[in-house]
Length: 308
Ligand SMILES: NC(=O)C1=CN([C@@H]2O[C@H](COP(=O)(O)OP(=O)(O)OC[C@H]3O[C@@H](n4cnc5c(N)ncnc54)[C@H](O)[C@@H]3O)[C@@H](O)[C@H]2O)C=CC1
Ligand SMILES: O=C([O-])CC(=O)C(=O)O
Image (cartoon, rainbow, N blue to C red; front, side):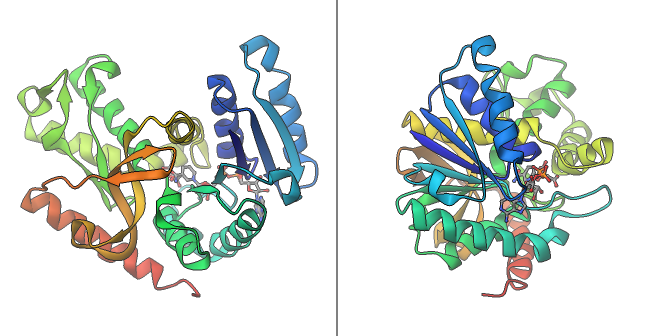
């Protein structure tokens, strides 16, 4: 398995590090437009190999896509992150051009690649990748829900005062400050509904902290997060590499699923060697469905700003 990570910045480097540490890939190619930057990150990471016990080879490239040739998976993290007070949607003007140029070059060198889109606003960037290329829809995966679900579990465990490994839960909908739909009704502690342990107020607060999880970190860090985003991407790449058919909410191109068409939006799916193996349709409550549809409308508005 060869994985390319475009953008050797905070998220790209974290993602490359987690992939290498899990030792399931033969090669990770880190590519960045900044002269020498990806080579430097690759060398630094390779010097952790004997300490951390992995054999994955990490190579760097300054914008030379020939080094990415025949990648099985490519992760797009290139673009600018937001600053405190900004929304992800405000990044569209800069990031749309970057993502379009990057994906065209990736596909030219790896025609069968599975693309994982990370750059924000992610749902719209995944839609752009769908529109700008001929990549089949099962090979375009927007990463947001895997991260948002990890943050949901973190907040649930905090409220429950229990280990995170006791908690299960999922966030669907948009990867935005207002458009995430944490499925509180279905979240559980060892199979027992969390609604049995937490009040409506506590659950509403968990849901809100989850929705603004990225903004909270951006305020603390002065730029957006990278460890959990990198870990979430590496979990998706591992599911593909090891054909796990593991369920993650991902931003996927929908053609009728959940009543939506012509949009990339966060829904649960099984991820395996073909990328998206199956979209899982779950029954939503009226309230969940209303929030889900409202968020989809907002994503459509942002998509409308793309130059397609
Ligand atoms: N979907 C998600 O859950 C998450 C998305 N993000 C998004 O990921 C993106 C990257 O975030 P960070 O890594 O923190 O930013 P960063 O600024 O640390 O890294 C971005 C890298 O992209 C490179 N780059 C810019 N244009 C390029 C091009 N044309 N070709 C190749 N490389 C190029 C830059 O030189 C830089 O090294 C942002 O848009 C951010 O909003 C961040 C966290 C989570
Ligand atoms: O908050 C941001 O801008 C970056 C991101 O998508 C996240 O960490 O969820």
